[in-house]
Image (cartoon, rainbow, N blue to C red; front, side, top):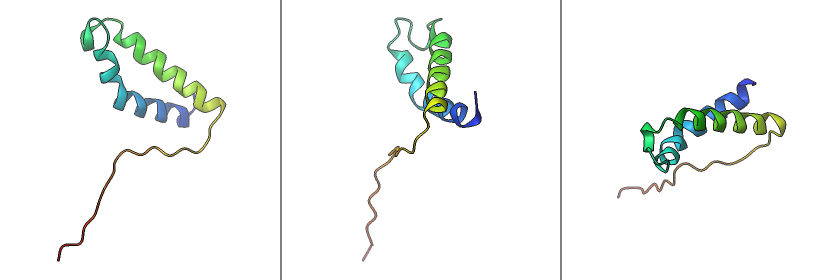
Length: 68
């Protein structure tokens, strides 16, 4: 696994893994959680390595207003 794929898959899992594992029957303590995390990280990294492309990932909407 190269660094690019590993970093993005780790980021994805850090952001999305808990909500996904909440859906497992045992929630975050489900013994399948580790298998799911590993499969997600490896799969995402492999796809990114195979076909990297630029993408936008909006994480926040911010509105700035000038105070009078």
